[in-house]
Amino acid sequence: MKTSALVSWSLCVAVVSALATCASCGDFIGVQDEQISVAVFEDDNDPALAALPIVETELLVQSYPGAHPSALTDLYASVGAQAVDKQGEIQLTTLQLPAAELETAATSLADSGLIEAIHRNYIFQAQETPDDPMFVRQQYLGQVGAPDAWEVTVGDEEVIVAVIDSGVDTEHPDLTDKILDGWNVYDENADFRDVQGHGTQVAGIMAAASDNAVGVTGLSWESPIIAVRVTNGAGQTTGRHIAAGILWAVGQGAKVINVSFAPLWSNTVIRSAVEQAYNRGALVVISSGNGGGQRSARGYAEALFVGAVDASDTIASFSDRGPFVDLVAPGTGIRSTTLGSGYGLANGTSFAAPIVAGVAALAWSVNPDLRPVSIVSTLTDSAVDLGRRGKDSTYGYGIVDALGAVEAAAAESFAPDDTPPELVIDSPRSRQTFSGRFVASVSPSDDWGVADVVMFVDGLAFATDTRASYKFVIDPAAFEPGTHELGFVATDWAGNSSGRESVNVRFRSSSSNDTDVPQPGIVFISPSPGSRVSGDVTIDATVTASEELATAEWLVDGESVFVTSLSGRTSALSYVWRTGDVSRGSHTIALIVTDQSGNRGTAELDLTKR
Image (cartoon, rainbow, N blue to C red; front, top):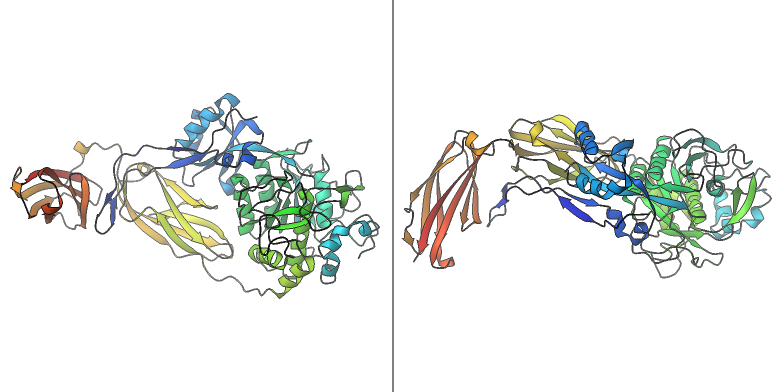
């Protein structure tokens, strides 16, 4: 069990100096080392996740793209951790370390500036007209309109379905000829035989061999099955194993991926894998959970979360509910394949989810060029509304309708994607100066899904990010001081690339002493220091520098009041101080001048308002 509840710690590196902003125009002229905040165990904000057992000797960390591998190796060693697994598609590394050091190590990792997210490794438990002789006992098939849908399609062998579960019984007569491939993620070997029975039931619901005078009928008869075992012998798995299973299935060509574990609606590690699957053209279907509670989680748009109803289309008492629920399907008295070549009944959202997954495979079979976004809309738009009108937190959009989904998919028009992604640079802003490690972030968007974003420094590829949100860490110490161009290009899964969006920033060596750097010189011309003034006072100064000047900032009593751009190596400056707006007495006027390399000169003038 957990050693304590480290919930949403926000840890950050120290701030070194202050922002400079024009009070009247808001232009930004420089910045300190950026504040890099990392949320530790953020998933614990969800009580359902916080209550789960964890692997007490593991941390799951996601590093920023751009973090140098040797720096990460040194960081992990410094906290006494060893990297035992890596999933490069989502920048996820599994660290092994003593249980007593888990929280201390998490704090140190968060404070490094190299790690974007730190997670516990939660433990999840599996949730439990053809001539096939048991078809007449599979009433749920008629409940979702499957026989009518089969008049249009019984699936397609090109639409592969994946079962992320306890494995599949490879000798079951209704499954043996359907299994295309498989892998044991938990033990990292090719033995994906079912060790618990749950996966065999799920597989039979999705795609059991049908119209073969044997056993039961699957939703998508013709779809081949990829079996991915992610559990131990007791049916337990972890977040990293589920994520790895999803990514492996996508790599083998799966189009529909069923994950009958819960609660996953707030798990960010699994969401990273789901986003990858969605962007690469696959749809993940997830069970809502069997806790029977009302949850506040909103889920994520890249997956379909499925609750369970009984034979009368009423929400099952065990089915978890909340804004995250997208659809419902029958989840009581579901007859399917079982271990030992048998058949049996089962209840649970675990068995509602593969019904929706099977319908998704049917829909895809009539229009294989559709992207996941279109399959999702065909399923939700065609669902039979239950409960309150429209989407609600109990039934989602309603109960899945196989015929409606198939007809909607067949009518969906397909046009090749020739529209490149759009991309906006969120940070840094132009002309910022950095002397320490900072994070650059961008926001790409694309209807078909962003494959990756590549960051360039001075025209050379520097790092690649394949998951939202798209952030990169940069250490100015790795570059020469001066001005550098940071460029970003987003590419979608159709191969379309955005234009390169760029911003120029300045790097300054953090090891330089101010006495070693030629500072711009500032001389106040008038009025004289200590003068007594009133009304509108014009303050004149001259500045000189050994390098090209960049900006000048005026401050009154420490508050920035005006910023202007400069050019050349010499400049005459004036500022009108309106003393009517300030109190009588002593005041300080300061002028800060910065050159193109980030060197700064500062001078102050003390004046007294009469």
